[in-house]
Amino acid sequence: MYNNMMFMGRPTKAQYAQFSCGQGCNNLGPTDPIDKIGARKNRDKVKEQIRTYVLTMLGAPVLELELNEQQIDNATEFALQIFEDYAPMEYFQWWTFNTTPGQSVYTLPPDIGYVRQISYKEIPHSAYSAQDLGGVIPLEYMASGSYGSIAGGMNPQQPIWGKTGEWTLYKQYESMFSRMSSQEGGWEYLGGYNAIKLYPIPSTSVPVAVRYLQRRPDFKLVTQAMQEGTLAFVKIILGRIRSKISNPPGPNGGVQLDGQALLAEGLAEKKEFEQNLLIRWGDVLGPTLG
Image 1: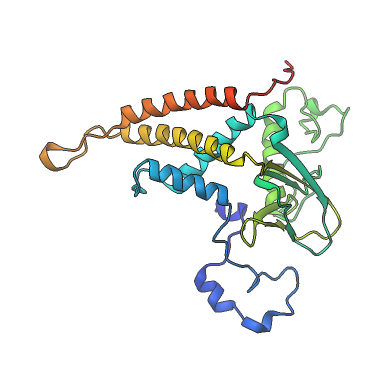
Image 2: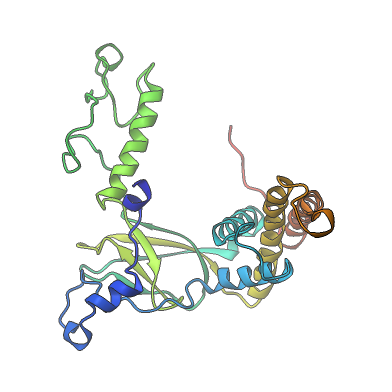
């Protein structure tokens, strides 16, 4: 139930064939997705290349029981996060633009190699008096400066003394409510890797910020570094999975899995991956506060 509420699923092939109206959909509005959502065979080419590299190095085909696409995607994100810590700032850039009312699809600049984050419709808001989803939340509002700690109230801007736990739960609820009620924007690739589609469709002109990895002349080296890091994380994940079963039944007395060896190999490669990043891409560390 939670997952169904949190993301907008694409229509299945059967639904697409049932509701598609062919040439009769030329007059659809910007909010009608039927027969307007094209195939995404090349969605996120960089991740696809990394996934192919990892599966090949592990000896494809790999059983889905041991390793699935979600784990490979997570390993890719882990490697990219570490790369961000070591990569020079000039490798990551921000592209900002203002939306056009009624337009949800926007073409990306040609120098974008990998989109890391898109900030859209992240305007501060309050969920108090929000009755769209079944009534006001069971928290009394106490403005800043009121005796909230005595009255049991809640300040949406900052926690009241002794109410940090309740305030944290409220902020989680506020974030969930924002996504469910389409107050917080989302995005996806459309038409391959060169365009993005924003959700919900902009009704006014609002700023959008895209943080991306540049497609530089040495972008192949960056991709190689991400492949090496992802492979190390996948070996760690797969090693821990195989370590749970030491001697599964099989011919000639059973099958010996290489879980511990694979785990040790992945940890060693992860350490080497981070050291190589420091040598290849190491930038001057910024100031640390606290």
